Structure formats: structure tokens, C-alpha cells
Image (cartoon, rainbow, N blue to C red; front, side, top):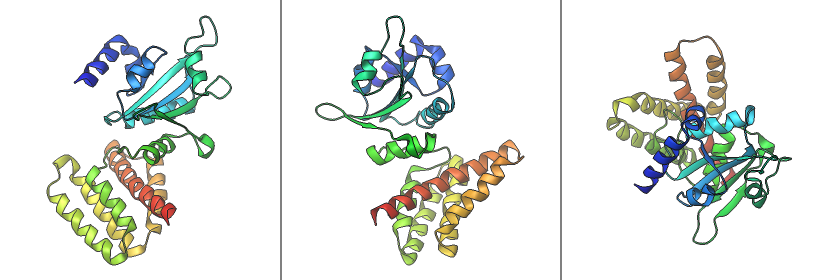
Length: 250
């Protein structure tokens, strides 16, 4: 309840921010600790006062993807190097300055001081990279449009399983399919189809299918078809992340 009131205050206090950036919250030196302390994890971008460009767009895209994740705050701190130099001290506290903007920091709440982890953009500054960074360091579940939490968990179980065990996971998916809401029926079919194809052709299906879907999405297609293909692509990413995580653990 308190969190809801907090967000309502933020929305009405700065409506233009929410209209422009979706799930992205603006923080300053006064609100930073008060708001980040309410969440299990906070992904914060320290940047110029009026950010723009591909990196800012990637960050706002991720903010929209994570807008329904209760445990995660995605926020911006606008820093000015002129006038009263708003938020400059806050940025410096966390190793951010104009020479390394945009600087992204992940804060994980703890019993004492929150743990801070810096985002390494050497492998790319994209919404996918940010999503992976948060998931790997917090365990917070962040779904993409069309993904289903229960089935994402089974995707992870499936990628770790032997070929025979994979068939049992497919049966679990079939049971869950029967209880899915109508809005998730298409997604349920996609999870099962991907699993069947992996059993039939191997894990390489994930990469070849990703490439195929990308070509189709880049082409001229109807909005309805594009929506369906994007859901397939998003669900496929769940398998991709699960496969990579399993590979890293070996």
C-alpha cells in the first residue's frame, strides 16, 4: 500500500516524466535513499540532466519491460555540471561523472548498506544486456511480453534435462497449458513447440530460429503477425538465457 501511494505521488508530481519514459522514475539527492530502500533491487542510470541517444533509449525500453516487476525499481538521476550542479555529489558517491555517463548501477537491498554493482557495457548497452545483468545479480524475475512465469521456469528445467527427461518436462507444460488464461493460450503452444523442436533437432534450433524470426520481423508484415512473431522471439529468449546459464554452470 505504501509503495502504491509512493508511486501515485511520483506520477502526479511529474506527469511529463511518466508520459515520456513509461516505467522510468526520476530520482534526486533527496528522494534517492527514500525510494530505493523500498525495493529489493534498483537499477539506476546516472546521466546528463536531459539524456538522449541509443543508450538512453535502451534503458527506457528496459524500464518499460520491467514496469510490472514489484521488486525492481528502474530510475534515472539527472546530473547538472552547471548552476547549482544538481545531483553531482550523489553521482560522485557512486563513481559516476560526466566522463563515464551514462553510468548504470545496480543497488541490492540488504540488512546494512545496499550492495552496489556496476553495469559493464563492454558487451553492449542494450535492453537485453540490462535484463540479463539484473537477473544474474538479483534473481528477480523479469518477463518479456508473451512470456509466462511458470513456463519460463520449465524452460530452465528443460534446458538442463537429458533428452528423456525433456519429454517429462513437456508433459508438465501440457498440464499447465490446460489451466492457462485465454490471453496466454498462444504462448503456451509456443513453449511446447519450441521444446518439441529442440528434442527433435537439438539445442541449435534456438539460434537458427532466432535468426529466422529476426529476418521475418525485419520484413513487411501485418501488425498482428508481428505481435505473434515477437512473442515467439521473446519466449525463445527464455530458452536462450536458460541454455547459456546451464552452459556457464558446467
